[in-house]
Image 1 (cartoon, rainbow, N blue to C red):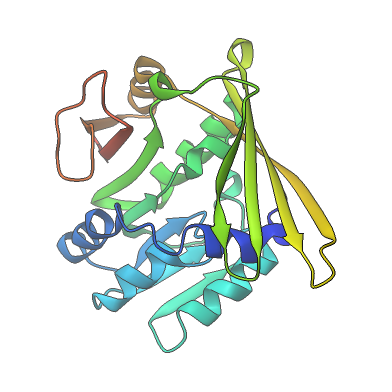
Image 2 (cartoon, one colour):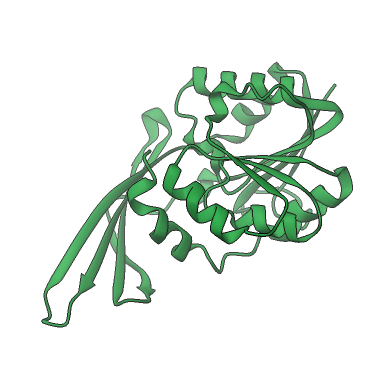
Length: 239
């Protein structure tokens, strides 16, 4: 997905989402830096880690997202890099690699997944950790229902409609961004977020196939994973 046209909305939409920040910041303090963040977006998690005193290498393919990320992390120890997690070749290793906030749901094919995890394995220091979280597909809502997502500054109203394609384990979230000008004219911007979800045992098999042991939790505070868990929270290490 090309995030460039919607980078500012993305930053606005998730500016107040903080559920995962302490989880990743704590790991960064425990394992040290530099931390490699895959799919760093506009720097929400990046900034939290850097503010805790740990250096971050933030990998993000979208130029617009990187620019916002640089602004959000100005003055902090953050190195922003253009790059694709499917083709990691940084020539260095890291004590901690993270992929927060469903970043791995942008790996749409088996080849994408394998290339990414192979690269992660090659870039981890001995004893290093991989940490990430993913949406639990048990909570996929009704398909093709238009619903109001929220109101934002500047007179922005946002509606979303999701399509669930179970045959390919995909979620398509269609966004409708409506802005009303002073004359009452509504102008609509649309875009579609495509995500490919993992099932639990598919995820575990993927990690095992690249020599990883792992700890699966159902939340950011070490909650036991069960059917009601909203997230897969994974910490993994090479055997």
